[in-house]
Image (cartoon, rainbow, N blue to C red; front, side):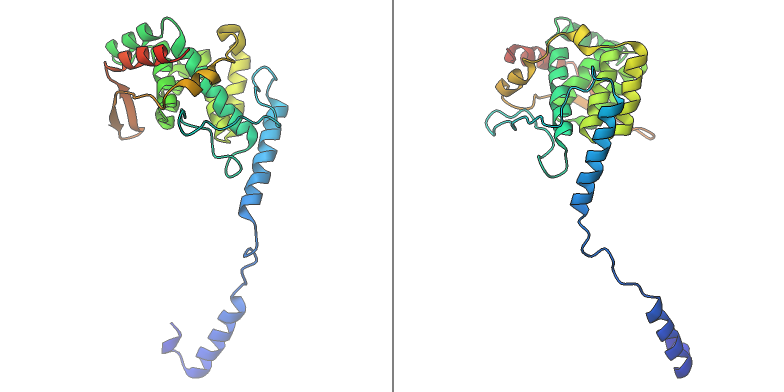
Length: 241
């Protein structure tokens, strides 16, 4: 730009441009440490504001990662991008999903959901839990939202955990508020789910989930269940203790 100017003018312009330049004040800034501090503050805020009945994790909780031979997915990588309570939320979500799929009516609900062209909150919840166990997190969230919008308390609880394990504590607080407003207590509905983690260790790996995808111009890719999925669910229930 300065090539078309007179030499004296070009010199003044170049000096002014050099004065306008700023040094990189953030070259030594530790972004990873800053993210860890932010996650810690957000999770502490979530623990203060959420009723204890919904906050299933604790700051000192440590869950061993599944071994390579018997892994069923896995929580966020420890130490890098997830706080310990985010890891715990992931395991709680997996426990809840296994409890939903072990329910005696789950295959019937899923079959009805498929036959009714994806209508019905209970079948949507079952499908979402299957997608979570198969590591299709975005699809699981979509169908939990569908079920929660129809008033399904378990789906609301799953969304609370889903947002928590992703570190999205503001969204988790919203679903926590919905749970309080509707008086949903997971232990009262589903009982003790402590055995679910053991069940996860004994499963051979993420289950095969038969589904197709519908591409909506506004919502993006939406997973849709296929009829063989009912048999997938029966096989998964048989594999779990």
